Length: 582
Image: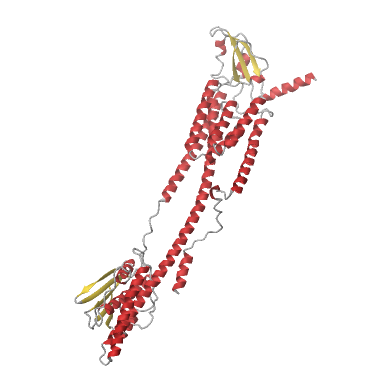
């Protein structure tokens, strides 16, 4: 039964995991051999070529589709070469690769927003997040791009506020967000690898715990065997001593009885020494199951072996119970009863060994919510009582008994009493008080703090992007609605009107990026021209008014006025012109 319990402990402490963990070579991307490395290198090269083709497609197509300012073939070829270098460096040197694509974007547009290199800019930012070890390097790169872009916008001087807002929005949404996504991707892969490594470590630790539990179970069996066999050997020594002093025993038999008693005492001491070798100093006391015998039956069996015992049970139970005890109580009460049995057994064993022939009194009483057991023996009443005491420090005997009683939140006192010896134990009925768990690292606070920092960082990035987008839209709406010249006022203006009179009906802002390509005629040479919108509608093509002035500030006069049509009107006009030509 004990062997089955030991195996069950090992099985219960073994924790399995559904599904097989990945091979060791797959955790963290570690390869197994040269063949795998060659295959992975070939795969990376193929993926690099495919990535370059995908990123080069917008570069060669946006010009043909009319979505970008026309560029020469040499400029496109140089851009493709730089893009190929960036794709090649994306793994080993992610920051230089990202800066190369940023340089392409800034060379094409000061605001960094280009359809040709925008996809490459975002993809290389994603690789920067996946491959860069520290966030500081990426932040330095972002800061450098922002500074260079701001300088270019300032030098160009064409609606710098809007250009700078577009630059910042492109940097946030086209670089920072993909970089954050790359970092989260990398952290997810690292956490997955760490999770598998942790699972393997837990399995190893559980195997160690199971092995230790089996060893403790074996030590428990050995200790229980020592307690039981030691008690039985002591009773054999008592019977041999009684036989030795029998008056009608012949001398040869008396000598044999003396040898038997000495052999039993030596066997007890040897058993004590062997069990002491099986236990390590400082080991936790293994819990012992009740032995299945009542205290009354134990006392009766010791009396039959020749010990003079007076047994008093003041707990209100009927007379002595012979044989196995019936236990219909809780686990804690059963352990208390088992410990009472063990205290009496150890005290009787010590009395038989060190005070043979002495009278022993066993008293079991109630002491509040606890059971109190007292075993007292007098002076030895037999000859040959100079049996040596067992060696101390073996981990059993009274020392092991004290540990077991303490585990039940009880107390044990043992020492001389009058001309004899007394052992007193007090055991509470509430059973075992759970031991406090071993201190563990405060992982929960660290995890909470990490989540808080992640949420703050992500929230700050989102808030920054939203602020930039909102600010850009607000500035766009303000500039468009405050540069509107009412068509009625425009119709009243006449060529030759003084500029001072014209400015009375003009809005406070002019259009910074007028559609010059749709102007019906070029402006007069040397004239100072201003452009105004005919409507405050947003996100749609509207007609523009062009007013040109010549002369000094005080004497300047309106020399030309023209209407720049909308995109749709321009297309209709071109269609009509083509039909006239036909």
